[in-house]
Length: 63
Image (cartoon, rainbow, N blue to C red; front, side, top):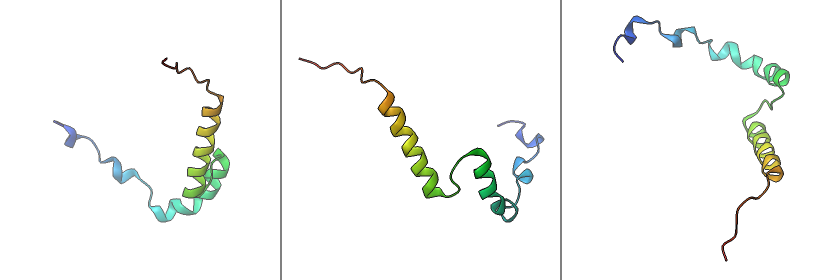
C-alpha cells in the first residue's frame, strides 16, 4: 500500500508472550471463557448447538 511505510509498525506494540501467558487464566475467568484451547472450542460448539436448537426449521419440503 502506497505510503504505508510512513506509519508505525504495530507489531512493536505487542506484548511479549512470556508476559501475557501467565495472565491468560485470570483474563479468561474475568470474561467468562475457558482458558484452554480444547475448552474454548467445546464451549463454542455448545453455544452453536444451543442456538441451532432454538432456531426454527423454516426449510420447505418439495413434493
